[in-house]
Image (cartoon, rainbow, N blue to C red):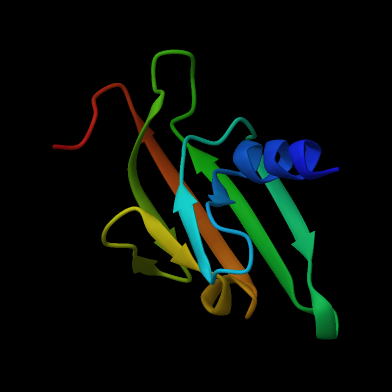
Length: 94
């Protein structure tokens, strides 16, 4: 159970580091797009731009039109639904 849940999160581009914490670390997604059905009929759409075998680095992440600074998302932010857009690059951010 736990390993398969971690894989799904990781494939989506974010994963909980500490179970029970509100913090998710951002990683490189393995999907082109996904939709997660949340409670109260909310949806979280995940999209990946510029994805190809050479673009393995996350250049930036946009959550509901706002650029995420740093490498973390909060559960309270994504539980509201909306859209996460990963922009991929062939070069790492410094």
